[in-house]
Length: 304
Image (tube, rainbow, N blue to C red; front, side, top):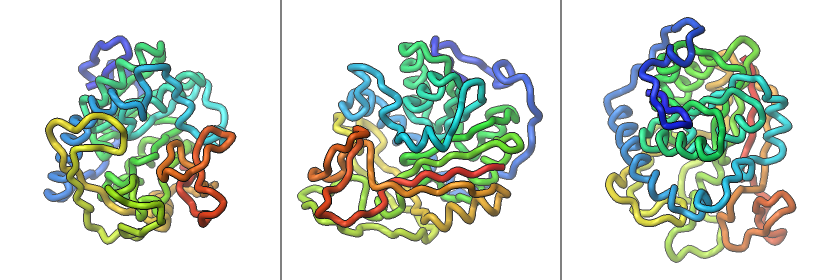
């Protein structure tokens, strides 16, 4: 299903994307992985109204999609006007709208039907020409009818919900045109090891709570509250995440035939993960000088 900003639906992807072949891609998942991803889908459906009501996303005030981007992301992405840009695992589509505002022909894809519908409504209110597609990222090639893109963008809490990065990288390679670019702006595996939000009663210490290197097994989470300030989740609270170190990410991309062109590590975040973080001139947040300088976000540019 495709949802357009005006709320209308397109039954077939070919109605919106008439050109392009339909390459076949083996996206076979284990039964256990499929079960976990179905649980994640239900969880993101339940999270969506929470996030729509949160101050974290600020959708009840003024939409500012570019606040989720570091300046160096735009430098790495380059000129987007007239480009076909696909945003994988887009959730509410706020970043997808930023691509449309910069003149790109933007498509957002997400596993959650509730998120896709909400994203289309947000884009409509922002007068942004964006199409949103509901699909598992592993099914993106088929869901998009073989459509290929100049740029595929993903990140900021996306890769941890994928059990198999090799299959993901192979999917991305099929979504890109020759010389097309994949850009990842993702929370650093070290931040994931520290935890995406403080535990109840936790102090300001930097404490390793999870693996940095993936073991191939999922981290099971169950909670009524998400990373935002929104109300409690009503419904499905179980979710599953997989840890992926930088080496695993790079190895998956190289194995899929992509060429790594740039890798950045940044000590800033778009929100204050720790209460003692300082606001930077960019409007983002950094640990104070008295704390260790550690990477919290990374940007990776690769090309097919």
